[in-house]
Image (tube, rainbow, N blue to C red; front, side, top):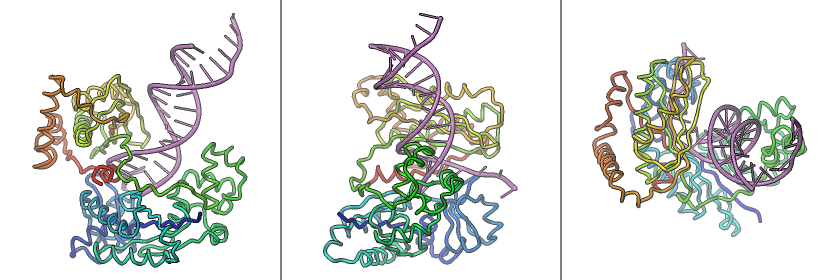
Length: 408
DNA sequence: TCTGGGGTCCTAGGACCC
DNA sequence: TCTGGGGTCCTAGGACCC
C-alpha cells in the first residue's frame, strides 16, 4: 500500500524561536549558543548570509559577521515551541511522530486516499505554524520517512518539496551521496563511498548488496535501501512510550587542565546534574560511564557495571571517582569531562522502606525542590562551590528529545 | 581561531560457561 | 597438549543524529 509521509523540519529553529519571542532580534543576524568555550548551536538565516554556520566558535562567527548578536539558548522555550508544533500537527492526523526537537513526521496516507493533495495539507500546516508561532518550516513529502526527510532538506527556508515514487530514480541518479546526510549516511560513510567510486544516491542503490556488505557489514543492507529510496519504518505515534536509555552530562573546561582537584570538582558537579535528572525522571541506573577529552581531541572512556541500581549523588560520584582513577596518571591536559548513567529502570519504591535510603532521598529531593524553585544550584555541594572558585558556572542542559519524552 | 552538549545504535574482542 | 563450537555478558570505541 502506498504511503504518504510528511516531514516538518523547522528552519533555524532555536534562532527563529528567539526572534519570534523578541521583536528586537527580528530581521537581524543572531546566533544561539552556550557559555564558555562554546560553538554556534543555530544561526539565523540573516547570519547565514554572512557565512555563519552551526559548529563555528564565537570568534569565527564574529569574524564572519561582526554585528552578529549572540543569544544564550533557553531550552525550555524550544521545548514549549516543539510541543506547540506537535499540537498543530495533530490537527491534521493522529499519526504524528516527534522525531527530534525540531522535526516531526506525519503519516497522512488515509487522508490522501480520499483524493486530498498532500501539498495542500503541507501548505495548511505551514500557514498554521507561521500564524500561531511566528516561525517558518520546510516540509518534505515522500512515500516513506527517508524520502520525506531528503525532500525536506531540498528547499530551505520555508520550503515545500514532494518526491513521488516514480521521481526517485531520476532524482537519485543526480543526487550526491553527501545529500544523504541525516538519513544514516554521515561524513565517514559518504567519504568511504566516494573512495569506492559511489558518488550518487542512485549509484548506491545500484551497487550489489554483497559489495556493500563486504565494506560495511550489516549496515550495507540499510545503505542499499537508502540508495533505492526504500524504507518500511512506520511513523511511530506512540509518543512518550519510548524509554530513556541513558542520562548524561559533560562539560568543557575554560582552560585545559591536569589538576586533579579541578577535574574532580567538575565531576562532582556533573554527578549532581545527572542525579537531579535521574530523580526528576523517577529512574535509577546500573552502569556508570566516564569520559575524558584531551586537549588534542583524543578521548578516553571507561564504564563500570554495578550489582544494584543507584540514584543518589554520592553513590554515583563514588563509582565515577573509581572509574576516573583509571585514567591517571594523565599523559595530556584534559579539555572535557563527561558522566552518564545507563541500564536504567524505574525507581523501585520498595527501597524507600529502607530507612537509610529514605533519609538520603528526602535530603536530595528537598535540595532538588529548592533548586527547582529558586534556580539550579541555589543549594549546592561544597565541590560545586569549589568549581565556582575556578570560574565554572553550571550550564542549562541541552536535553532535547528526552525532555519531549518526559513532558508529552 | 580550534572544534558544545545531548543522545542512540552497532561492532568487535575478551572472558566465561557449557 | 591441543582441540571444538555456541551463547552470553561486559567493555571500549566508533558512527551517526540534532
